[in-house]
Length: 297
Image (cartoon, rainbow, N blue to C red; front, side, top):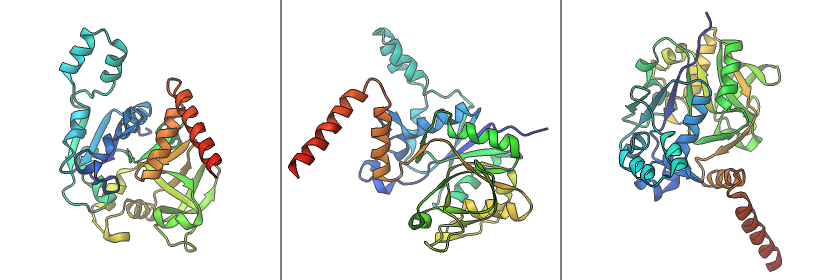
């Protein structure tokens, strides 16, 4: 019987220091692209892929993130009284049913692998997804839904992958490719953040994973890797060394690195331009700015 992916882990314990001072009091994951928090894009993507249970690995100071998914009776009542049914439906879409969502604390920042390990008791012996909300992916078919189809075909570990320039390999886990089959590649290894010129390929792992329980078993070793942290890529590669297949999946879509200020701004503009109610005004503004700068030169 083929396994289904119904659980997803969302590691959201980071301090968001690149967005200070805003993240002094606002969790980075609820900062908004236009009018939706980063985490809402991740939740919507997971739901579209058939995820039923949502596991958040948080840290101190993330209470606002938990409140975001709770009901807001007073606000709902006010919208209902004023007949704002469209806004009411938008608000209801952010609610999570009781038992659908769980929160766990990562007490020390020991790396992505450690954050995933914190959720081990809620995963048990079944495949699971990992979604990093910092990576926002605009796609006609949500990235995780694409990956679920690849997992159902391969029944192996699947990581989202994209080509990066050589000088950027130091920022990613990089796949060592065994066989390139186009959309899917089989791997013979993974290297965490190799220096430029030493990477086995330019195919980088980004923040979407579908993993087997074996990866959690490897994380139990709590072995540290690059940066002195417990690296998820090391555990995935250890599972491969024990005979499990690991596949890279070239997803269809555009990825925005919203963990960086530039990526966050790029995503904001891209998502705003994709909306009928905002496109014209924003495009006119951008055109005016570009025209003014050219004139000034």
